[in-house]
Image (tube, rainbow, N blue to C red; front, side, top):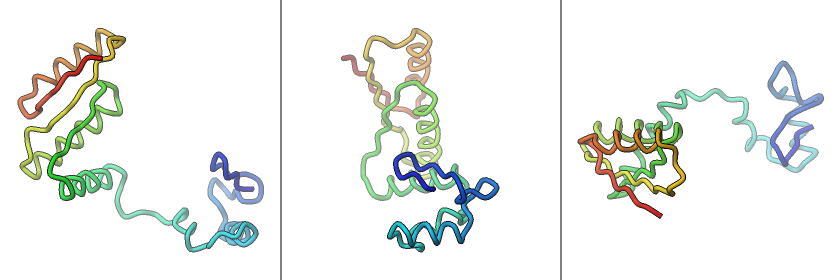
Amino acid sequence: NLNRNNNSYSGDYMKTGSIGENALINYCKSNNFDYEDLRHIKEYQEKDVFDAALDRIRYIYQRFDKVVVSFSGGKDSTVVLQMTMIVAKELDRLPLDVVFFDEEVISPETVEYCERISQDPDINFSWFWS
């Protein structure tokens, strides 16, 4: 069955790694879900994750006058920073505002990396200490 707490699938709802359509319909009926609301689980999207994320960032730029990236120096915020830079260049919205909150427990390697990022002329880097 479909476990609502951790979104995991098991038992007869699993068929070679995906939910069988009949099992999904039956599950929806027995749990008062609208099948059409869950049908997107099986649909392929036309865009990959990268292009969809760029579209979301473009939307943010269209919707808001000021866009700021919160940067930690980690892998996830580095990806967000790089993707936002792509869109900012595309839309001629440079320099990109970036904020970094130094909690004074950050590794020396991360501090050095953030210092390098702060030197990019396309970035308006603000470094805050706690």
